[in-house]
Image (tube, rainbow, N blue to C red; front, side, top):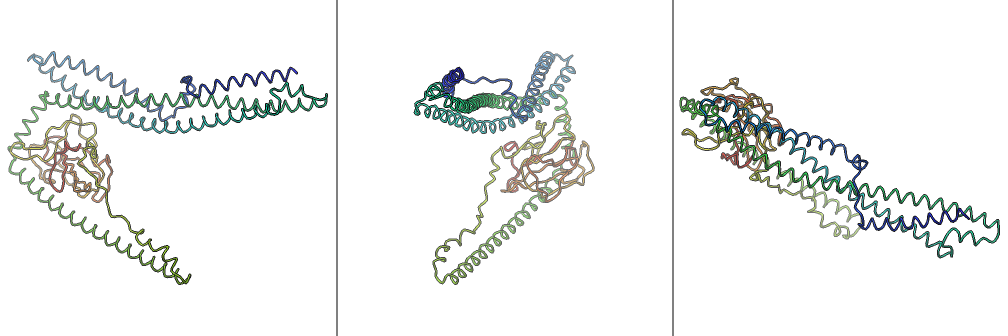
Amino acid sequence: MKTGIFTMKRVLAFTIAVVASMTMLAGGTQPVMTAQNASAESQAIKNNKKKISSAKDKISELEQKQADLDKQINSTKDDISKEEENQKAIQEQIETVQETILTLEDSITDLETEIADLEEAIAKSEIKIKNKRTEIENGVVDFKQRLRAMYVAGNSSYTDILIGSTDFYDMLMKIELVKRVADHDNTMIDGLVELKGEYESQEAELEANKTDLETNKTTLEEQKAYHTEQKKKLDDLYAKSQAVIDQLEEDKAAYEANKEQINKEQEDFETQLQKLYKEQEQIKKKEEEERKKKEEEERKRREEEERRQQQQQQNNNGNSSSSNANGNTSNSGQSSTNKGDYNYTDKSQFTWPVPGYYHISYGVGWRWGAYHKGIDIWSPGIRGAKICAAAEGTVILVSNTCTHDYGKNGSCGCGGGYGNYCIIDHGNGYWTLYGHSQYMSVTQGQHVNKGDVLGIVGSTGYSTGDHLHFEVRLNGVAQNPSNYV
């Protein structure tokens, strides 16, 4: 009798728990994130969080260093006796801003990776939570049906079953039955309680990931804006740097002294480039004609094969029904000749060719009586930096013959003044040119992806110092790279 009463209490207690559980599932309470839930996060997300946190600390340190240097620059800029100290502070600030930009880039990349990981984790969690909720609801329904079955049978509790025994032996049999049913109920209850705990854990993790996602998206936009701000600050610092001003004067003097030779080299190079452009257009035209010819031959072959199969089927069946059933298949084998438009006029299609070095010492336009067709990218310490493909494409020309890798006041005549360089065809008429490299590590005909290393920065050809000359051309005509990268 005591056993029956105890079991009945457990049933009543569970009924109350079921009601509370369903209230929770309907949104009555909010789950709490625990250390155990946090440990369920993927290792990739954890690692990214550490890297992002480390980058944040480093950015804070660099910001403080910039603030101190800004004060020093402002306190010495109008004092002639402290001009040397002022210029030293400017150069140090240039390096500090450069390091800040590099750190921001790493942090932005890590944030973008974590955002993608979190979005994937959220999508998976939402499916798991939906399935877990369904599993709980089904379990509760099953248990309710079991209780209802007892009630319909005229037994509202285990006690009623035992009291209804006709004799001692009947009671023993019913006690054994109650014991077995109670064990089954206990297992079902424990299972539902465990499912409820898993549901709460998964829901808490989902909410935490959603919060992290929104925080990271906000941080990402802030860092992108700060990255742009830092690049502008870098340009301002270069404008104040006497070393840069002196270099500009030296470059102008060197150009004036070698104007005729430089102009002739550029004219000859431009002529060769236009010839290359026409050759490439002829090659592409021929390839397109070959492609269309093969497609047409393939289409005819398929049509002939279909006609042969239809004829054979007609002969086998002795009627034309199969022919009618398959008569519309002759066009299904045609492959589309439409190609997507790369639309490289979208600036986001190209990436910066020298990651981490953003100062443009010379831009596109008229300079000292000549037209400069690209941008010259220069920063302290740029020598040996990786030159990267601005977009996917095919290398159509490589020159690696220049051995004069040093700053010079005149042209050595190599590569039409570009020294060691390469040109990439990106399709749709777009080319990019990378000049004055120490050496180019790619070969003609090689396919490259956006960001692939092409070579390293040097000072070959007509170059007064280490830098990358970068051009973007559309149908052979030089464009302003600043509109693309």
